[in-house]
Length: 411
Image (cartoon, rainbow, N blue to C red; front, top):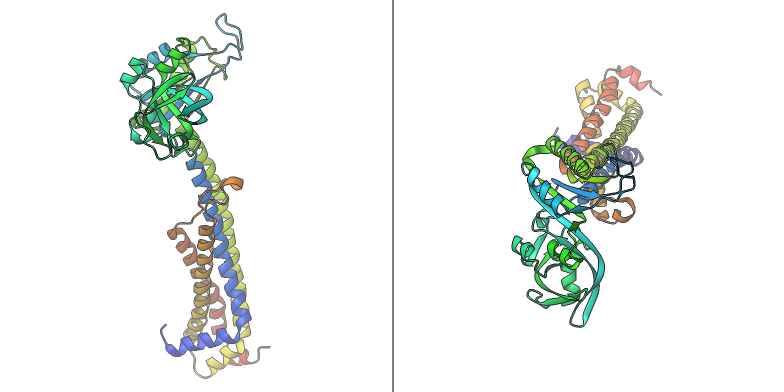
């Protein structure tokens, strides 16, 4: 294996047969390159699906009112459903066993918010303390809304990072007052959000304060629930069914009406997306494995040709005393050497190509940070090397069994 003369001979053979070596190496390198790129793009697509959910807790359920599509219990169809404080309180009490956190959310249309001479349009949300948990809001400065703020209907706001940047610049906003809707609000906190820039342009206020300035309305636009993680995915599905049935019964909505209320679960959405992503990944992997197989067949065909081309040479070697084992090992070493070098070149180029892509495909193809893990890449390369060795072994073994006189007469 480590014979200096043998390696010099292999390198000499390769240097004298550059075209043959390039063809064999290109087949291997291209197979690994295509596999790495396809598999990496599949991982990038999976990253995209996961990024859609990193803004929220996965154990979160959003309940939104809609309009009925069927008459029921004396009510006509197309009736608008609204949630109020009583609905929020009753759900909190009845489903306490399942609930880890619950908050109403009232979203107001974007309105002009100002501080000194600076102003801009920002959306305002009326929320409760648990909203921080639901949205995985990260406090940069100050604090979030608490229970006392809700009870006292304080005119406090927690502003997003970009709101702070637009209105305050480098100035510390905590304790300062902003103006909006003809009212003054005290800034008690600044948050950031992994959901991106759009989420950081919101302003949060106590939902009771928002209700009080809406002519004393007790309507809530949306109810967000974080359920206890220990109930698991199956428990979450059962919880969704129970809460949907309860609300439909409470609001006199036909149980078969699909439009009266809408419930969305982050875990269900993520599972569906992951299932879809896994199917795509399987398809991509199948195509990638097909590419590897094509590479294996290609190197096999080339090695058959190589051995055929060297039949006379092998006959001379046998005539002067070379054993069948030494002939097989010589061809096998050359095959493995070419396959290994070419495989790792393809691997390196593929990994560098994926690294250079980054987020450039996000906007058009929804692929974020494509990558291939080292284990998968090395396993694919090793598999091609092994099969490349087998591809060289089979024709070499056949050639080693030819009698010297037959090999010398080969045309």
